[in-house]
Amino acid sequence: MIVGVAIWYDGKVWALGRPKRHHHIRHWIYLETGNNDAEETSVEGFIDNEGRFLNRAEALIVARANGQLREDYPLDIEWLFSENLW
Image 1 (spheres, one colour):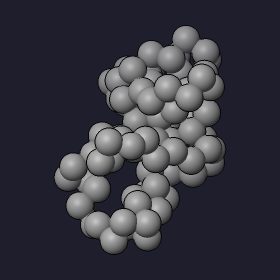
Image 2 (tube, helix red, strand yellow; image 1 turned 120 degrees about the horizontal axis):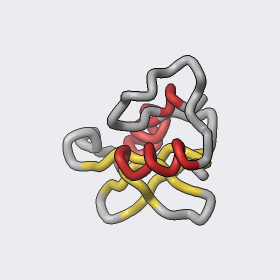
Image 3 (tube, helix red, strand yellow; image 1 turned 135 degrees about the vertical axis):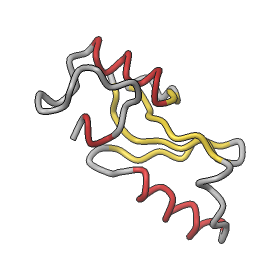
């Protein structure tokens, strides 16, 4: 089950629970590191209930399997976005 957004940056997973979005993590990274390059040097994804980082494609599989996609989003998406969940 998907429980939050996450970004893999500089060898570390930065994660926040729902209803946060990836831009919240980017701001946190900037505040903590002073680096504004996270968008170019990171991988956006999600964290599951076991604490594993999943990229957007992997997270979509998990969200579908757990019935987490919002009903108002199309089923033909290829990447998961937090807006698809909350």
